Image (tube, helix red, strand yellow):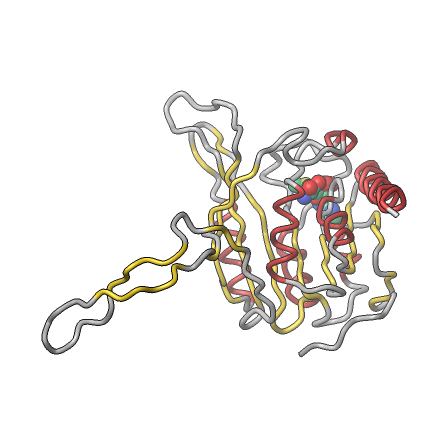
Amino acid sequence: MDKINTNTKIGDLDLNEIYCEDCVIGMQKIPDNSVDLVLTSPPYDNLRDYKGYSFDFEKIAEQIYRVIKQGGVLVWVVGDKTKNGNRSLTSFRHALFFQALGFNAHDVMIYQKKNTPFMRSNAYTNCFEFMFIFSKGSPNTFNPLKTKTVRQGKEKLVANKKTDGINNKVWGELKSEKTLINIWEYAVGLGGSTNDKIAFQHSAIFPEKLATDHILSWTNENDIVVDPMTGSGTTCKMAKLYKRNFIGFDISEEYVNIAKERIKLLDNQFLLDL
Ligand SMILES: C[S@@+](CC[C@H](N)C(=O)[O-])C[C@H]1O[C@@H](n2cnc3c(N)ncnc32)[C@H](O)[C@@H]1O
């Protein structure tokens, strides 16, 4: 088992901070093989207008691979732009690049949005983004999220066929819960993604529940979670709420201020709850 991390620093950086920096430079201050989870979402094909934005995917991917520890996980949440009826497929290019770097393509999950606007007249309404799950080797941690099964209690279940060819039924206990499927659906917008109004000053946040579900699945308390493109700070906020250490980077000062404000709101909430 990994040792519990009680440090307040990682390399040259303070843990539990959000830095206004190009994440390629920022991640260079993090030692090799030291991060349990990178949970992030990059800018999608210039789909949104990010202030001060510079996005060198390959350099970012290389740094992510370097800082993640053996058994650590990358969750890469990404969608594609459609221009003149042609999907960019950038998400696939990213995924193949990560695999070529040495990551194991542990899973390809879907982030389905509950409330999506109608967008195209000659294609079905797109309602999802990819959540690529990459791991360095096999994941160290998997805490499967569960859901209740429809049928519970005792039932007569088919037992193994014997040589007489007869299927015997025997009383058995049905499982009361099962592991979730890999399509996760979330409400988006105010009250869905978050109740923090300030977060919507950023145009492309992912839901707090999405961040929570990945943090709980792939890490344990005190682990280190990094979001190199943290935007409004969703990953950092949920990492803090669930007692993980975090580091966030964003190239935009405006977004870093929003992220810090959200962490402050959470701290105030903690104080109110005392
Ligand atoms: C899709 S948004 C992330 C949103 C975030 N998941 C949230 O819930 O708020 C992508 C972010 O990447 C940032 N970004 C783009 N290039 C960057 C770079 N080189 N280093 C750090 N941040 C960068 C943008 O400013 C933007 O906030």
